[in-house]
Length: 288
Ligand code: UDH
Image 1 (cartoon, rainbow, N blue to C red):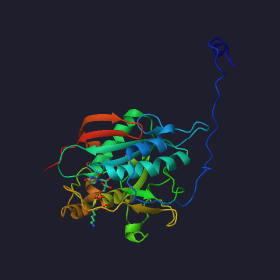
Image 2 (image 1 turned 135 degrees about the vertical axis):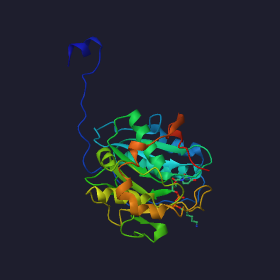
Image 3 (image 1 turned 90 degrees about the vertical axis):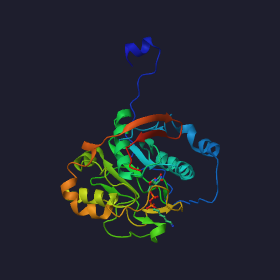
């Protein structure tokens, strides 16, 4: 009880104890369905009372050591985003994270580039807060178990290990697609993600190789905890499978040092915050 506090007539500052390592109020397996078309108002009503502007949250009753930015590469998938926000915010709250949700929108109609958008998201999130951990998530993937923790581990983590569309199995052993987490240090160690994978395919395998080539291994939840449900969809416009991408993988060992966060170029067109997320529209110089 300090004199300064007395003069301002304030309570003595209380320091919060650390949140428990295992969040105490998790549900376990979850029911998820995409048939119901809920309105944005419903989503906000359900999840926003506890959030701060920009889709930010930190626990009020304990100190969270997990400062996590969730990065979603995005263009024109608002129905999926609505499902994502409706299901994920309550999960992230229960996991007692100090987190923010960043929707990184690719400006214009050019060829999509998932990995470059995730690089831009990393840079932009760090301008806002001292995040130590980055979860990179496709907009259409919802975890079916809240014990799948959206935090970082001793090694880069592949989280979407059992997706419904792959029969709840890894499609192949080195798969690193869908949802993953890397600490700031791990991300910088691999020079971030490649910027040069335009269109669909290959970038997730390049990231996997970067991790292995830097002497790290992949951490994963078990196949029960790591279940995901994907919102079914057709291939988007301007994101065709690029036949040039697979061939680039044989060169990752050479290219990773100069193609990554150290060569990233983009411009921010706008940043818009609402209660559910921070929307960052970026021009990544996409080819037509
Ligand atoms: N994304 C967008 N907008 C796009 C393209 C991609 O938001 O126009 C984002 C989104 O977060 C998506 C992620 O990039 O979840 C990955 O893209 P994807 O969903 O196209 O990749 P996926 O491998 O599907 O999941 C490929 C098309 C499958 C077509 C199957 C038809 N039966």
